[in-house]
Length: 162
Image (cartoon, rainbow, N blue to C red; front, side, top):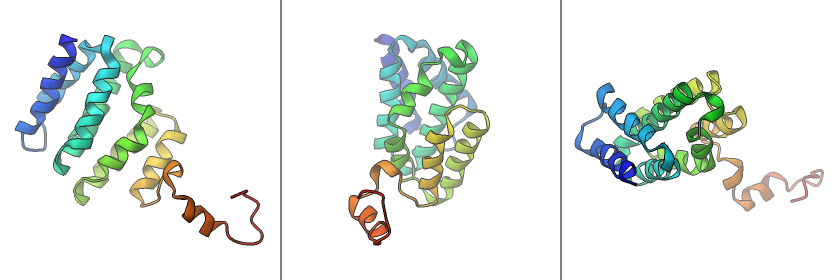
């Protein structure tokens, strides 16, 4: 658990820096995240919580932490043995809902990361597509309110079962 505490200290020290965050700082955070791999669930939860609670200008650096940890893990341990990407994907819709509360200028940076993830098959398309849709203002399927579905499907010719 000491490794998790060290990671949290590195992660939350981001608040002491003015964005953009240096490559050296991102490397420090990534290394401490990888060192805490035995507690990867705690690392992932810490990053998700950071993104949820941080100021808007730190949302994208939080995304860059996810990207850096996942890419390093895949590089170091191989795609098959990477534990971080599958864990980050569990709450990815919620995480991105918080991410999109960033300054409007930063949304293109989020889309850029998503496009790179799609190009490099970091996450499957069925995970990335709803996140790209969110950038375009389309709510993800799991959080579409029922009354919107009813309005969409209220035609007499609809067979969707709603």
